[in-house]
Length: 200
Image (cartoon, rainbow, N blue to C red; front, side, top):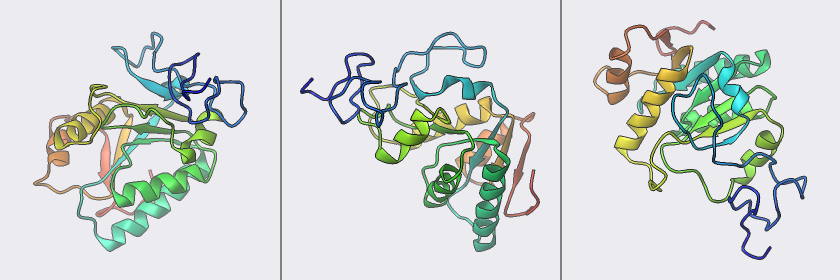
């Protein structure tokens, strides 16, 4: 193959190899999803779909975060990682990306939910956890969306809150869109680290 496009899954793995022919290429890269009781429609994904059946804690944050809440978020992520708990999030902001890095240093399951289409080339830092079966990447937005927008970010965050068992927020601005999403889900179990430093 010279195009870098996998003949098996139709996704560019960045090597020009068919999935499974190179141990450095994630073996599960199909954007097609089989029927799953936790997903009510076809959903483009990369990675281990069985992670959707695990108890899932969402991690999200408003843009403004108190310094004390940042430390609490790092401590919380370390505890979740060491306990092997599944964490799901968009991991878009600087703090959220730091939390994702902490989670990926261990072996706990992680679900990354994108506010854009799936990548054509899997980022290097995600290949090993995907290949190991401990990471799932989900894109619940239109696959013609190649850039994150306020609308797609809201759509992604709503999907996360609808599919988690509980949610933890580093901060939650009462006037922000994230707070409105939470308010529209009165049965959502959630807490805010900026006001509560205890572990779940």
